Length: 142
View 1 (tube, rainbow, N blue to C red):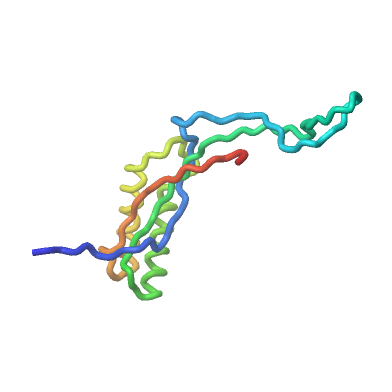
View 2 (spheres, helix red, strand yellow):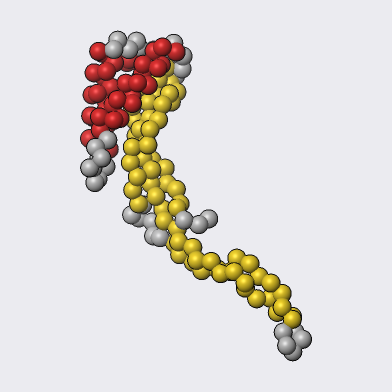
């Protein structure tokens, strides 16, 4: 007997943490961003830098929580699922947190989502799932 997976879509997302990418070194460079032609006193043409720039780039990792749900749902139920997701994320976003623990975050957030779904009568609650993923971005120059 073949089983096909349920179709799901991301219905909400929240940034839950940021950290520096510890395995990626910072990049630094100094470069000339603009030049100008000059005729020197001896008559030779010379292109000289007229605008120096220093650049420093740091790799940052942004961590997101995502709520996936059924491909189709009523607007009311979808709004309720998003409300429960927001509460679940908030329940785990301690402003004094120094280190992000993905397993701990997901366990606590899923527990709060389930409690909210139960107390607010979210329909099709078993078709909503939470996950965590990250994306790296460069901060600094391009």
